[in-house]
Length: 95
Image (cartoon, rainbow, N blue to C red; front, top):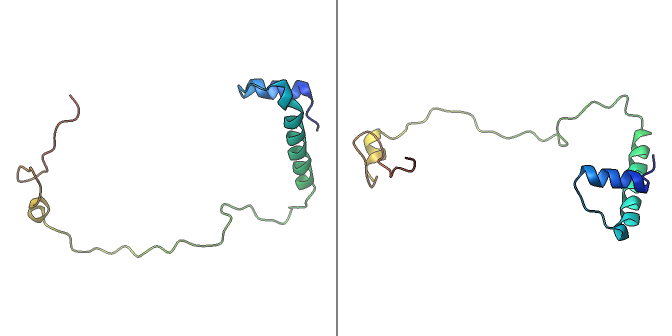
């Protein structure tokens, strides 16, 4: 597949790009080289290749979930600038 001026102008219109005439030749060359490369990739036999979900075989090293002691409500509210005994008091942000 080759990109010609008409196809380039249609792509630029669909992408809402302004394409000055001075840049058309360079852009056509770039797009044609990408399409040539894609055609080369299509020639590669990938019949026995499993689809990938990740490019790496690394596995996340996650820590084990453990229940740990937490602080009491009183301890959590102790240093609060404003509180009502159960909750933090903050300025109203919505009316």
